[in-house]
Length: 323
Image 1 (cartoon, rainbow, N blue to C red):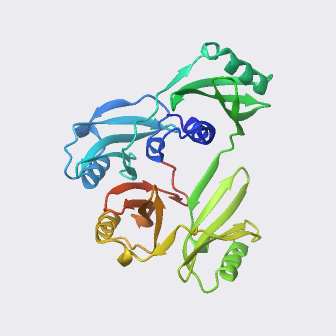
Image 2: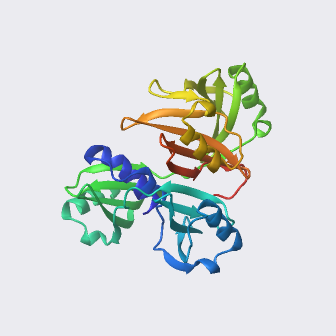
Image 3: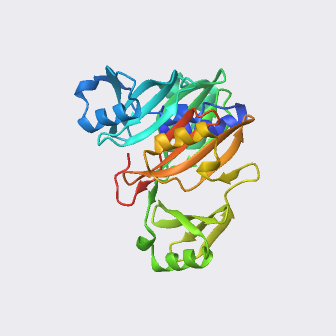
């Protein structure tokens, strides 16, 4: 699934219901995939697949193109559950997630093949601009249309219902998110984090860049409360807020159920687990944490019975190529 369409489709389904689970969106790809024999994969890719699913014998995998770069996808059976695993060419694990829901079908169509109401809305919104592509998917049995367009020489994404209702029209500005060390932050930002985070344990810093602007966000642990502190590039405080909502709790890994501890430690592969967030989803507890593996950040979520829900690559280290 096209990443922009997946994102905006998910937003749109707040109006007509959920488009898909986060797991299904995780495995979206830009182009049609092709099979490749496992033995033909780069050695680092083979190594990662074997480490993440040692009980699975891989015959072939799917080679996808994601934002112009190759990635490798395969399903694996882990403890009688089906997981989707995605790996970069250098062997970096991009994600491992419980494959609970099928991906919604998606096809690229001509504008002339879209319903008249959809055509009318797209043409009205784009005006004298150009519509580059139109995609069609189905969510909850209802057709949904997405289009990329150039309006006033700027890229936009539009999402429209079958009856012509506009759900989304958004300027597509490329945004980058990278992990960064405190020492590499501007001096003004370091000072702000030191002042606002006094007495806290700083867990990690993310740099968010869009166009010619950057902001910096640090996760800070004050006792048993997790806060995020966000600074402009000149050291101006943007916000400082409690990240753990009332229905959530921060617990130590030793306070998690034994089955959860076992899975977290197995997936962390010896990496330090600082904190674990416990929350309720559909009346059941889930446990989420972040770890560093080979210099890369991963988020891991586990069900109360120890079932791995997902392990996914989060922000890339500063200066690394996006996967």
